[in-house]
Length: 95
Image 1: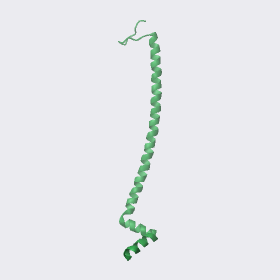
Image 2: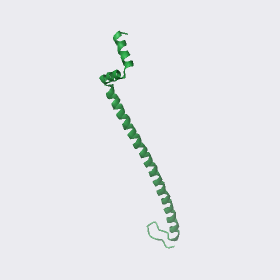
Image 3: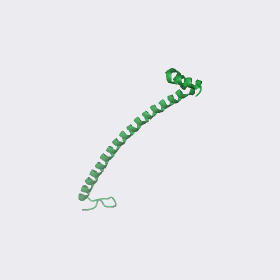
Image 4: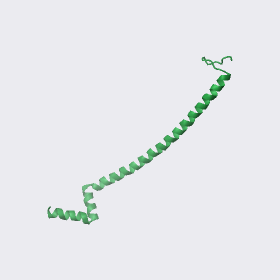
């Protein structure tokens, strides 16, 4: 290993400021900034995903309530039909 390379590596190990200067020169800081932005966007997407999951749970609960109401209405209809049957043509049948 050449003396210049060894000195360069020693500088990298010894000084944070030197490392940052080298990283900036190489464009690494721009990459890190972009990674930070991607990480922030990922957090926002995860929050949106969680909200969608909560909304889905609420929709499922609403659906189940509507289904229960439909079953109750069907039962009511069947009981009413015992007293006043409806013909297939839609009119009332004589009982």
